[in-house]
Image 1 (cartoon, rainbow, N blue to C red):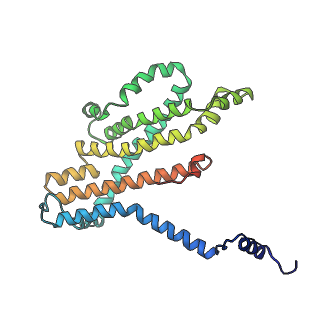
Image 2: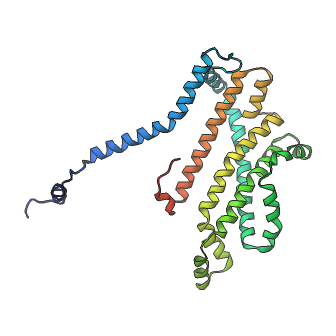
Image 3: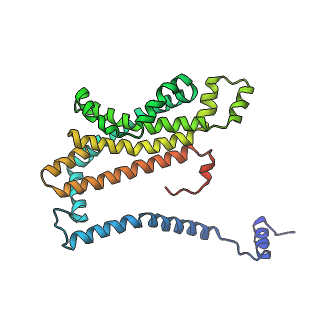
Length: 290
């Protein structure tokens, strides 16, 4: 029929079905409004806690020394930012945490792969992992101080020691959960054990391994800050202990806010990396709450 285009045909079909076609501009506005709404809903609880903090601090129920106002704490953070102290302490803490985390990630994945594919390695390390995973490894801190002192090497060693266990466990579980049919099919096609591990087992277990890394990352940050508090020196934990010794409550609470912000950024970055690495996986099709 002359003068009929695909667009008019689609509109006619929608009208015949009793549906109103959605304009592209309406669709874009709707998506933007929905994203803005859910973005605001995610920070609502944080804003509520912040408001409750400010109201409680100004109510007079507690002294400013016990609970400084949030506005005063934010002012202290701004002052530290201008002086450069905030960036220096945050950078030192994040550097230690990330170095220890990367060591734990590489060593944990390699050890987990070896345990899942070699019976002798599993026989030797499985009791160590089983006993060491649930115990608080921070108990080894005095030993680490005796051996390595209170320098960066001791703090990074404690971070790696604490963070390696969830990575090893997740790697072993992930590789052992790979479908046997995939391994049998690859073997029938002539794949070697090395090819089975790197081209079949490791990619198939990647979601579980990344989950272990997501558990290990906040552990690395927590242990790093605890080591700074106990050993002293630069870093967010060390700055908090210095403020505590001089009865500077604003500095202590500023450190708490800084830790929360750094932790959120690291966890959010890990969640984004997970979505990028698992675009091929079925979980990428499911809605995310992170």
